[in-house]
Image (cartoon, rainbow, N blue to C red; front, side, top):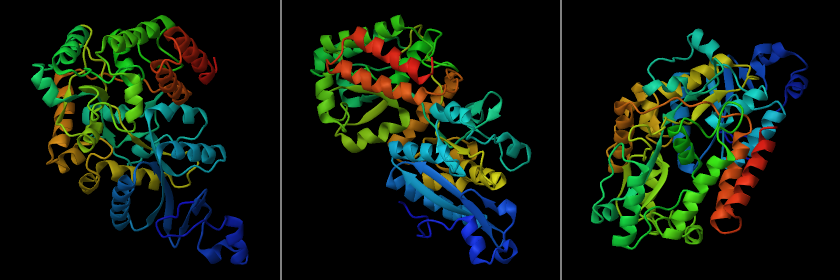
Length: 432
């Protein structure tokens, strides 16, 4: 069990406190409003619980930000908890099912409808209307990112978008300069040129890059998810995975078995491929893993115009069961607007979502400068589109997509078997 920031493990429940105080709430200086699930008040001080997933470095940065918050808001104390991604959601699901979720927590678009359907998420619009949460000053319409059916269930802390990360030296030697609006045909021709001239696969492969497939679908007027389920057919996925299979056989995509063998290192950093699709703010990973110089290239298009891109984001959500919605809103507001927080966090959770934080932190390293320039280019070219919050069950469908795609890539399933299995598991996930 993780300790809170004061090092105390566990809490005394409300009934136990009353027994210790002879049953008198007045003796404890408590009011009914101050005795919420998992958080209380003492002498006018309110405690809220904040949980997130991430690395130790993220935890260090967040705790520094919390120390600043507690200094500026001395009547609000923050008890913290962080876990690796999968452990976080396992613990959160248990807490939510037991009616004791954190007051405020890190969230993502794939979980909004899921936990909204479970009556877990706080509608933050009421706090915005009350003046405790500022919804002005967000970049590129990001304030709408956490809206579901007219309710505000999450507030973005940063932004990212899908990109093609390339080995700049290999692309340069092959004479390839990706430009906005290049087509999938041009992209595949470039991969073939790299294979033939540089003796390396052009890309790490697209079997399981779900969010790239989403962009491809959006270029064709569809989407991976709708509000209720999948937004594409078995024929659509058969076409996509068949193209991926053909790419591996022709050598323009890396050998999936070799890609699997070098994990957790990426195929790009391991020099098995000259490019890889991922989120733009992951670019720093390749610099730390590999020996080359890596850059961001545009997403290929179908018609030379539409990329299907949007700005994604981690966000902060509140618990519907919190006894301190005002303090939760004040904390979220501080974390997404305060300039000093941006200087502490940098691009750890993506490019800052608000203008105040974006202007407060100006990266000096080339990688983060590229990320900022890449996203600004998307805004300037007007290619960004809105995204529909994923349906309840999307997280299960996404995990199935990744697992089944890898099984197929490694030869454990045929394309037809993989498509059938994915749609079968998705129907179960969405309760169809």
